[in-house]
Image 1: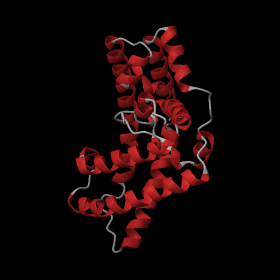
Image 2 (image 1 turned 90 degrees about the horizontal axis):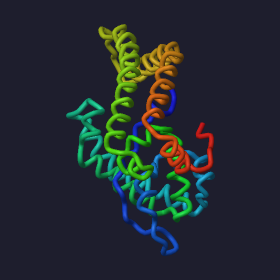
Image 3 (image 1 turned 180 degrees about the vertical axis):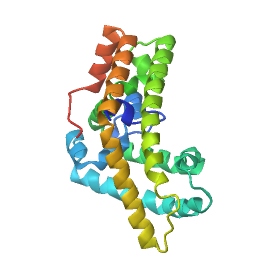
Image 4 (image 1 turned 90 degrees about the vertical axis):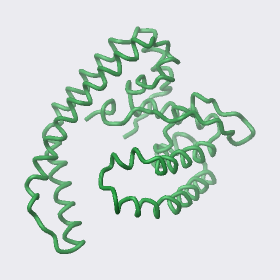
Length: 239
């Protein structure tokens, strides 16, 4: 499945932190930049992260992990759904804190490039964000229409993914494991079969991706589309 429907829309809060060299970060870049892309060494290189900055980012990640892990272990004892975690304010607070600290390590030029790559990573999915849509001149009605189209595409794709997941999991509903090792092996088997099942639907999922992208493009004027592509900056292969 392509990038438009595969990656969630950027919805980070605007951070007002200063960055190195005493320069002020662009609030728009801070809003859009997805710090998670910096997990990739390729992206770090493209953004221009130095070895010193990389060390600083690693220390930040270690410190945040040390704070979050004890909470997550307790959380998992009473919650089993990933959706519960996404709605948990404490966990989201850890993520927001990490995001703020990571982006504060970057200078304005690096932050701008990360913003460009962040938009490229979601393709036209970025126009679902109200700040981005306003920046390129979309009206509220255009934004509502684009979100409607995007949501419909997500629902079509998710229906296929859910069907595959249910089909795979149904084979093991009555399976009992006797140890952590057996549970780990079973989970690996399920994941392998799930990926194989999804691969069979790649053409169908790709077609939904293309149709959704064309429909979103149709919502935008040529000027708005050009403005969005300009915000994406120099094309870069994220794979």
